[in-house]
Length: 212
Length: 212
Image 1 (cartoon, one colour):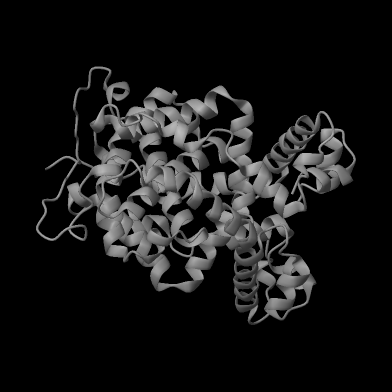
Image 2 (cartoon, one colour):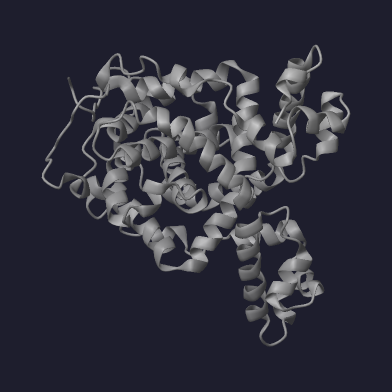
């Protein structure tokens, strides 16, 4: 934990430089191989400063993974057109990563680090639960809030995986707007649609596919 | 590469034991920390046997990640009820992981290893492209085949991530059938639905059936 009150002048900059280097190295070589020494070297600081400003490697992981955008802010007004909330959500999250290389490195680092082992997964799970999934629960239908939020999260995570982490051809080469319209209705359904027979006895089934 | 022709009696069993240990350790501690020595020890063999039967650590990664189910077989007849193809696809893939702990370890190991760094991501990308995405392309509508297959892949990957790797509450506690009906129509849309304005280019709301 950084000693906020006793920071030397420029301390916030040092901390940001350390976190930026952590994101860059974790996204490139993975969490396990991104050593404290290499991160310090990349940031141009003494390794001891990492401990001073951020903490041990686990703390560094959590701090580096903090999303550069506040989820509540990202989602503000996302449901202005209620039946296009899904599309707008996909558009906004893509816009963050497309317009900001640092945010893109952060999300790739998050996926790589958060999935590398169980300890890191726990950190990611906690971070997701307290930020993104919590924010999403404010825009979903009141039935099955948690499941809806996690379904949306699963599709967004899969998109990040395909486009930014694995770099699959079609997902990477498609313009963001194509992806917003392709993914939007699916996300919309998770947010507010009928989730199927298991969702509510007697409620109709929404079939969005072709009826042959 | 295993020397298939010169295997001693029981060689296939030794190889399987090595791969099972690799999956278990990679899924638990991640690819970087799953050492050849630890895998050999877990499998009860000399480390040299890993090199003999499977190869270096990269080869071990690819071999351990080979899905225990043939994707073509998994998808056979999945489109028997065309407008329920998405639901049946989710049901089948969940059934593989729910019924077979070894398959579940394999998929968690795949995600953990394949995302840990760029080299591993390339191995996962190649494996996906040549098996799962290729098989999926046979059940999608002919327009935008690659994008459709990758959209389906992204949702399935996000589901694996939430349910088996991160263990998010609602995705983990929901019965498979709930998930099949919740995710089915979204996957159906990726397979055969109208992908939105960017898709059109004169084709309108084309909803051709699967099964090419």
